[in-house]
Length: 612
Image 1 (spheres, rainbow, N blue to C red):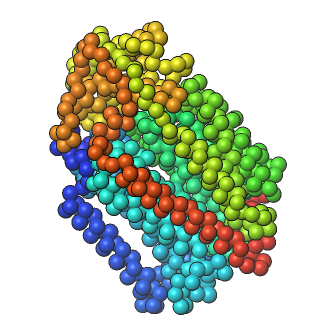
Image 2 (image 1 turned 30 degrees about the vertical axis):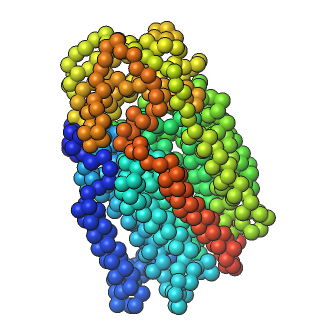
Image 3 (image 1 turned 180 degrees about the vertical axis):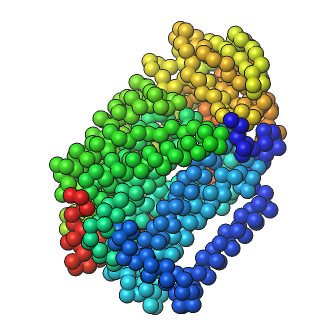
């Protein structure tokens, strides 16, 4: 099926850096109009001139279908969840377009940017609504004094911050492109701001939900069941948010070491599912995975078969959910122990389950090359994430000051472990010396132009033992609705490998041999088109020519500028890192504030999660 949204196929006519100023002005103007409209609504509500919101809140208040949550919290939560799913759809659509077509002509020329922009704005707007809707006497003791007569729930403040942080990634991304060129990877620093802010907004939403529950205080059977379903949906959303970091691996064009995938899966699963089970109740970990599979799988269906773009595989997470349920059945009253034990089991038993799943569901399956380091990183990441989940659950139960003597030490230690293992996971090398000659064994005309089958004779064995991957990867073909071709090479001898099906070497395709072994990531171009916007010449297929392997990123991301001082990269990266740290610490502060705020009667009721 040909994509109805395919971008123009002429690469050299697309800008390689930032957006044109007219598109920046239009996007900025749109954001300004939306912001002014939101502030006008908030001001009119706070001053009593707008009665429509009050009428809506009265209709929602006490409705059992909202789980007995106060309407001033349930309405923003609904807006935030819809916005998150909208942004998720746009993000996977955008990634698919960049993989299949390449860079776009600007932020307004890519249709996938619109749901991302509106989704992230919706998250921030939901936070603003959560701060503005309740009156002074409706906010509990965890509220934050914004102005005389105006107290906002802590969850609303956190949600505003997380959404605004994610939204800020949009203009900063354009600045980043102006300085460093386009980084065609999900893990560009400003891209991580978009993902991190949206994903972590679920923590803010959990705090807001608890504040709304405390204000609603309904205990009838329908409300309790609705509350359980609502909690499962939020926990499933948390799993989705934590899993978006894996998107490059879902599509099969990961630009970082393969050991990062089991680490990210274990971290996302442990954190989200421990929170689900201990915060919501029995069966909630499985229910959260079901919600995840429906929403996340649905996005893959819409982006892939419906829009005709690329298919993104989905981690299964069912084994991890059963692990958490089993551990929590033994120690439900010990959240930190549940988190640590679940993380250790997810890093080992869960690793084995996902290993099997990748063999049938993922473009690049896990291999024995990553077994030792992959299990170690997944286990460490799982335990650290489990401890963070335990702290969050204790905070949401208002038990944090009672159970944990030094929560900041546990919180900081877990973050340090995560930072260390992620740093280890992304560190890669590109040792020199590897070369290969290409022999064309079949040359034909395919639906996308010239296609060949080839053999590659290396000057030395390209891998030591089992490879993480040794593939021919062709992407950004543009004219084909798929736009991506990933093919593992077949070994003839330790130094001779061959293709098993034709590979495209025409038009806008960027075709290369990729070798990932241990900590080594290297690539050799087979065919690259001319790109006048980058002042890059064409690299044609050369039958019999010997070519050297080099740093993989330089071929995958030709758009990156190579004349930027190293110190500028470091400073820019540290600025983004500092902003991210502020967000994480802010969320920690908000959870701690809610946990320590006195609320007689309610705290005792919430010590036992629904369904336990």
